[in-house]
Image (cartoon, rainbow, N blue to C red):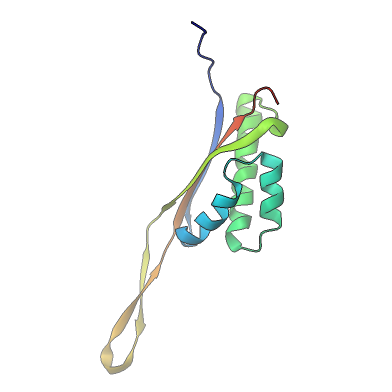
Amino acid sequence: MAEAQEVLEARAYVRQVRIAPRKVRIVADLVRGKDLRNAEAILRHTPKRASGILAKLLKSAAANAYHNFEMDPRDLYIHAIWVDGGPTLKRIHPRSRGQAFAILKRTSHVSVVLRQRHGS
């Protein structure tokens, strides 16, 4: 049998970002599975607030790959990216007759895994 080759992967996380997870997932779906350079180009031209957050996260993951595992940034691709909900800030909006309506200010936890393409 052939030996199992160790798969190196670089990870980066951003926690408690003050933007709702459903808004970040829209942008994360655009770059999932793409090469690092293509993903950066897509994020640079996507007019969503989450694109700046994800671009910074990808840059951090690429730096982790280069400095920790000596991977070539040109060979990296986004193996996995996911967005989870973080803690929700609860606020109230006063309404008529003494009522109070809830305002939920949602936060996100974003994680990304970069791997190196072999045989490009």
